[in-house]
Structure formats: C-alpha cells, structure tokens
Length: 51
Ligand SMILES: [Zn+2]
Image (cartoon, rainbow, N blue to C red; front, side, top):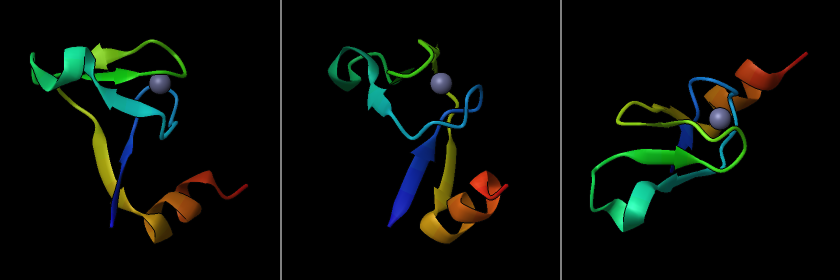
C-alpha cells in the first residue's frame, strides 16, 4: 500500500482537492494544493520521518 506524502510538510494528511475533480491534491496539514505529491511505501515513510 502506497502513502501519499505532502512535499512541503511531509504529512500524510493528503486528500483529493474538490473531490478529485481538478486532479490536484490538498494537504490538510499545511494547506498545500498541487498536482504533485510524493508516493512512498510505509517503510520509506518511516525512514523519512525517523529522527
Ligand atoms: Zn503539507
């Protein structure tokens, strides 16, 4: 299963903007709207967020 990750804040709180109608994504965490988000596996996400 792939996670959608915000390129700005690295949150996974990503939803389709306007129900997917515009083909863009919306980040509920920082308000980012755009057609680009990062797709990664849970493993990759754990690596990314590991401090
Ligand atoms: Zn964000």
